[in-house]
Image 1 (tube, rainbow, N blue to C red):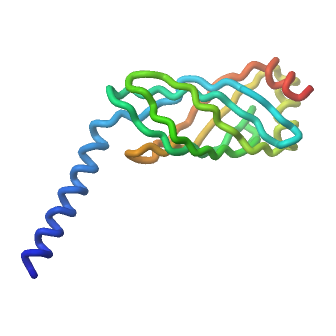
Image 2 (image 1 turned 60 degrees about the horizontal axis):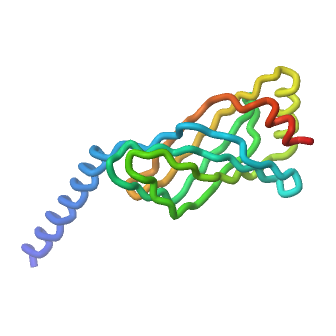
Length: 152
């Protein structure tokens, strides 16, 4: 019986070591670009096309993405998406990400865009791969024209 427990703990420790070793050899996917895709004030939804790059020489399953987004330092909503996509090896793929919009905050942010003609976004969160949760922070500029035209 003692030998059985010892064997069980040996196998358990080897599996744990292998999982850590795997994480060392897997490069985290990165967000290359974000583009506004659609806006529906009726549904309080906004969609972005997110270009994810897989720097590994093998495919990686992405099972989900969650986080929040700010526009001109104003929180405008949260994103939550599940996925059954595999990121192709050494490639960039576009995933459409829906965002639940805080409409009042979005209007406030859009007013700041019209006033400053600056549409700075900050997307923070994580995406879930078969290996682990990968945190991300992506900042950049959206077209002020796209933001303003989405309102009208």
